[in-house]
Image (cartoon, rainbow, N blue to C red):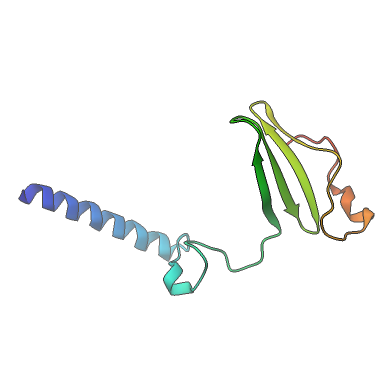
Length: 107
């Protein structure tokens, strides 16, 4: 019984030491201390966001991704991923800004 209790205490102590080491290096933050939404959440605005994901089959899915001011639809399968045409513009953007990604480009 004493040996099991010491083993549990040792594992908890190692986990605490690992957390403290990661916090010192800036790789882990506490959601309670920083007031952020989640554990390790970033404070800056993200330019690349997953808007929505639709699973078609267990191996095939569609991903609607927001990149800056444009939204792009990607299809993923076991063989890779590919951009789907036409490009869906959910936000008002000029046609000149949508030329950064080629249609049919692979991931």
